[in-house]
Length: 401
Image 1 (cartoon, helix red, strand yellow):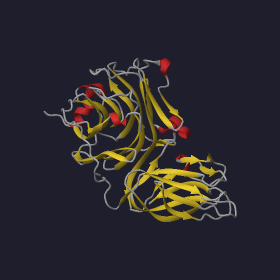
Image 2 (cartoon, one colour):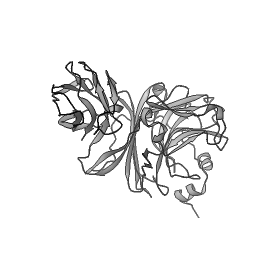
Image 3 (cartoon, one colour):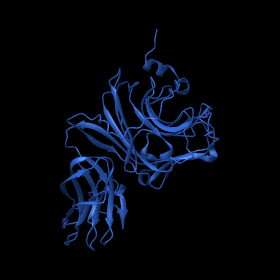
Image 4 (tube, helix red, strand yellow):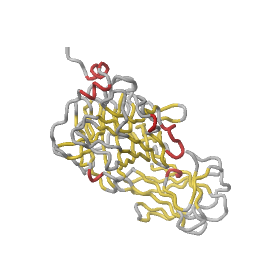
């Protein structure tokens, strides 16, 4: 009797499933710069549900942590740590997983307070993050995964994987549906080494060909791959959980293995929800701050705090937003003085508005300013800059609707 993908995944151990995965055919590197369609259907919008800060949340961001789970290198612990605003994953050549032919330092899931997000059958999810792959973390002839989706628990194969793989001797980064080895997209890795790259990933969780994925990689302002595959199986059982980190085989034949690390930052998780008016929220404390500080001494803010800029013209907070097209920008602020604190709003350096922010009555009285903007494709830098010596009002967050 022929086993289904789900039955095979449940029967095979994690090590066996990876070991028997068929090798990719020797295909030329794939790169697509034409935008693929989003999986988001009409009448739905993205709701931001998870946006951890390494500096604030630390390792509480994750559902589980797989740091030297086999106890092979106690002297190297911790291998996974918050490093300023980034999460750092360190891999030493002496590190071993419970299967000693491979190495693993990974984190799983999206923890929110005392609970965690659960990705269920029939749902559509999206994760975005920035990733730094140093030249020491090379593509290999076997598997080197830096992102996976899996069913929780041991003894199951991956559902989808982002991997660093050598193809015809060349280093590439690719994404595929693990079974039956469906390539979604691939691009050259070398130009992405030693740079922050942005990943935007959508997954429709579907069984029996009802699933789909979209994988987008951007290098600076350039989209280097934007690929979608539908009609695939993206469900194994129970629920789906994302994983980040370094999981690689020691069977590489190219001599590429060495001590290395991986950095992640600006992680976000969104769920598709009914209604076109739901906004994506970006907390000010997670933005780029010039001449200001994150504070939390005035009640009523969202997230972990708000930004209090210096009383100086030119002070600003900058947000990296990923929406595009005609939108509504909402700025939540407080001004406990009677003096106006106007701000210039720019998108990728181009001015789109200068707005007035008069007193709100108290620093604990928050107000929202809304106005239309048009955002270009790809990540955009939305900057709010003080135009007078009074500085900006206290900034809680922006929303893009």
